[in-house]
Image 1 (cartoon, rainbow, N blue to C red):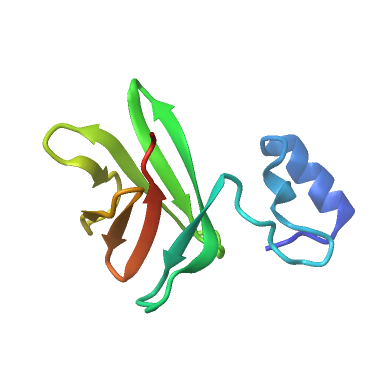
Image 2 (image 1 turned 90 degrees about the horizontal axis):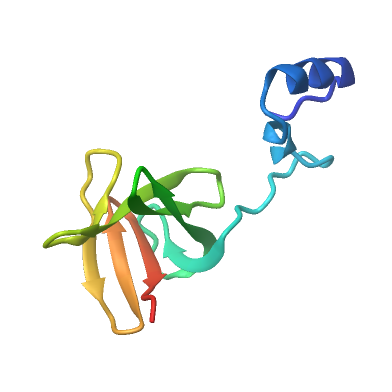
Length: 119
């Protein structure tokens, strides 16, 4: 939801962390997600296309990949899990990972992602 009232926006920007209101542009369109562009097939789509992004993050000494969808949804995957490699960090659906050489295909529920393999 984009806030149109300048008075409300100013009041919220004092309360909220700076930058949180930047998710809205003047036209009301959402900004593209930040990170490295990857191919994805969402909601059971048969073909892969651009539109998702990924970024690597570290938290409490562990490594994660955050994949963001064009609509703002996201998934987190934990990296370096002994015996598994990459696993779903949140949610009930577990990641199914298939190695394709230069990338891995990760399936979670009806969503699929092509993540590059670090060289």
